[in-house]
Image (cartoon, rainbow, N blue to C red; front, side, top):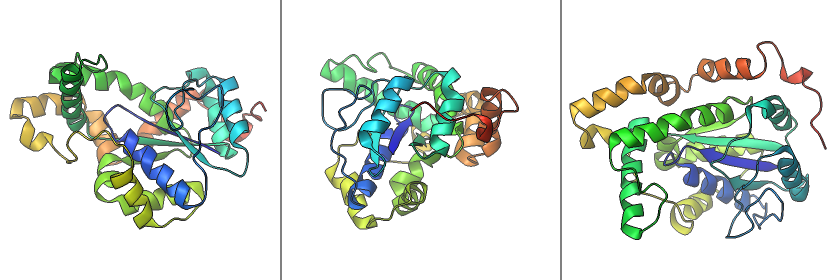
Length: 260
């Protein structure tokens, strides 16, 4: 099985990836690099470079039926592939895991990341100087997050759960993947041994680091996301996209078999 770990920038996607990797390693699933046309050829670890049908099928085939491998991406599959991706997930060929975080905290983290990028001479997020630019970046990422998260069976984990109640996150990962692990070993991997791109590992940073005007502006701009996703993890918000992507009345059972 291919576990696709994704999420908006600065939403905890790297922590999600490492928690899943640690859980799989402890459960006996090698996370050695997968030699596939879908993976980035350079660097350590499994990072997805291509989400075409051909690439996804090649990754699944190279992993095989008896191994589970986590791979990270910030990309998204084309909307027309939605029914096929959902069928793959129903057949346990893939498992999507997606991270999310309060947009007000994401914006602050993006600004931190922008400052670090400028200081080191990297491009990346170097143009993010203020909350307006950070909010634009977050807003553009919402549709991709919703597409991934609305696939039936996708695992959605919040940054506060992963960072501050990691045992709950590991429980959810184990349930989604059908495995068990030593939680203490997984936490050592994710929080001590692995590389995670922390800026400030805090929740609700915006409460102390924004003035009332900034908080009110971002709360109004992202009210739907804050209420439907961050507060309630409301299935109805995701189901509305799923219904549209499946044509309004197409059920997963009627989609046919994915290509092999």
